[in-house]
Image (tube, rainbow, N blue to C red; front, side, top):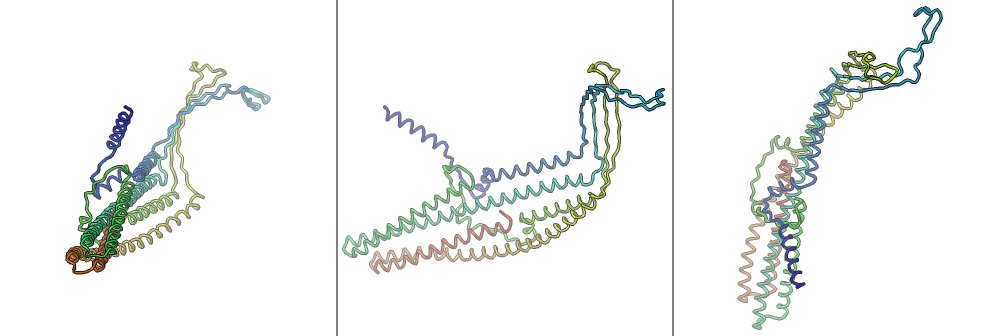
Length: 440
């Protein structure tokens, strides 16, 4: 009975695990999109944009007038006397008279409105410039994430190829072993060759297992880059062959240069410095503001606020003009600083444009070379398969010894390694080229 209960619990647990395991069919583009949706650093970039939008709203609200309401109660335990000079109020001698009330209560409404303040609208433009910079930084961060996922996806394709070739090698050595076993059973082969064939087959099996482990690790790394559960099952819809045969347009125009995030950020930075310079120059200008106040004042010996007689309104309105004097002298250094930063950014943009042009040209050259080398490696790889079939038939007919067959196997292994290396070089060159074009 206990065994039955245990089996039921185990079955339910396994069912729950299986229910939590997702099966995803992923192309490279789908993997990239999932990564942008699931990665925490991608979500963090969205928050930076939201904060920049909030700064735009804050800068716009500086245009609104400041309105405040306040109340104040002042109680004097003893009203301070006022000295009245002789001749006033009919006094022949100086007198001390207590003027005022112990309870002075005021409820006021204040208004301050800046009609013109240098740099106020420029601050709004600076906030928008900061928003554009955060958006471009988010774009650059997304591009970096795309590159990581693309590299991980291509690495899966490469490890899959290595695993596939390792399995072919294992099958080949299995066929060698079967042929040698047959000859050994018929007494046509020495025991040493039999043991050597068995050792080669076991080594091939061990190599296949290593390549399988590497493949599974590459899949796990891709899941990590996308930020999906490690227990998820992925079915890859893109193949290595489709990646190799993909047609990438060649465009070395200025449009490609401008499309690079590094160039965009420098342009936004340049605009920001121009706005800062404009604001610094505007600091020489005066500020004009209006102010107004309306107060209800209560004066009495007690706190009986119901007596209307002791309430009296007080109000005023005015204008204020502030002209910077010493501030203009201090501001000269800010103007100079932003002029220098503009010149520096211009030089950085020229250098970065030159760097990008060279990077695109170099990436295109490496991609063309890698594609050409891969085409040759593919031809040699398929030719090696034909050589293998021919040599296997010749060996089965007793045309040469097992040692001679192993010499052929060395050539096959060299061809396979060259093919894998050229595939790897092509995948790296392809990603670098796409990165240079600003596609990632």
